[in-house]
Length: 272
Image (cartoon, rainbow, N blue to C red):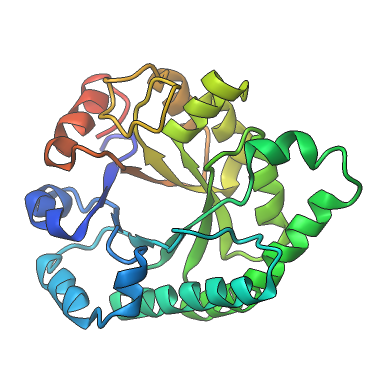
């Protein structure tokens, strides 16, 4: 049996059928990307859940969803906005309950502006963490009840330790760290952050989820692995040192050719 990690995928609902056999044959981890949109959470999503269950009949890999994120920060200053954000996440956790999903991706509140400015205003970093706790307090409690782990994904994060410290501040086994390789590569090339593998090293065994996408460091490309300039050997070497067994899901725009991107990493001898 191979000691190499098994690749999974983050897939939009309409593309699940394209990759069903590949997912089931390898019992690969899957992140559903149907429930982060406001219109999905505002509507009756029972048909989507029923269709998802039917398509995934026979799939026993780990299942998660991408949580909502459009138009808000989990560190909003406005209490009214925080209440809306909390409600969005609680609704999404209801989806996890119905699908028996055990992981939900949420977005980090870190910004490139904040990287410099939070350091020069006393207590601002602590206040940001406090606002995140006000937003997520009941969400974390509900996630613990359901057995769902919230994983905090880097978006504009320049310092990988910001996300690690935020996850640690909850002192909960249900709050961990996510890494988006393309976002980290953008931060490295365009804003002077560390290379992608350093994000893996910094998170250590708090890392339980990775969005695998390639990029050039200029923009959030979500290219297939092999189409950009990420050092995949360094990334997978760092991943190989972890005991946390993070879910490694390809999150690419060209979902029709997702398996081609997976094959690139397989042919490099990095995964199966």
